[in-house]
Image 1: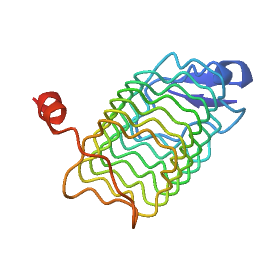
Image 2: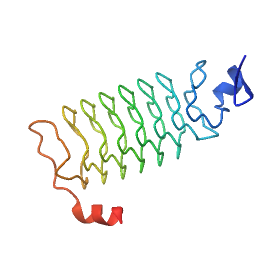
Image 3: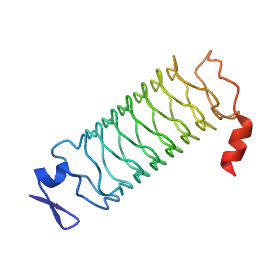
Image 4: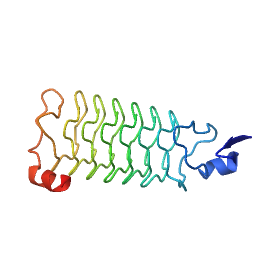
Length: 188
């Protein structure tokens, strides 16, 4: 049996995500944590590489600087979560809900974001190079300084997105007009 934060981690407790305050620690690798409800939401700097978190309820989770490279987050609820500086390279986020999530400076390179929901998300200065955003909803998302080079944007909802002259779009892509007035209001 393993121990994390002086609590035993076995198959039952691990499936309920009863591990708290995992800042900078390795998360136990056992059964998948898919379709779980995280009772504690402190995953700052946690190593979650390759974890199966499919369908997990991570609403308002603190995932700053977490390493989620290659993690499976299909259908996960990450609404209002803090993912600043998180590594989501090659992560599988199809259909994930990221409403109003903070993804500033997050690495989403080559991530599968098909049909993911990003309304009002903060993606400023994020790396989305090569990401698949097929039919993703990015309405009112902030993309100032984001790098979408080589991203797949076919069918993506980009109405009222906020971006600036530093935002990099795929070659030949004609971005919609930026929503400047809303952007100024949201930053105040």
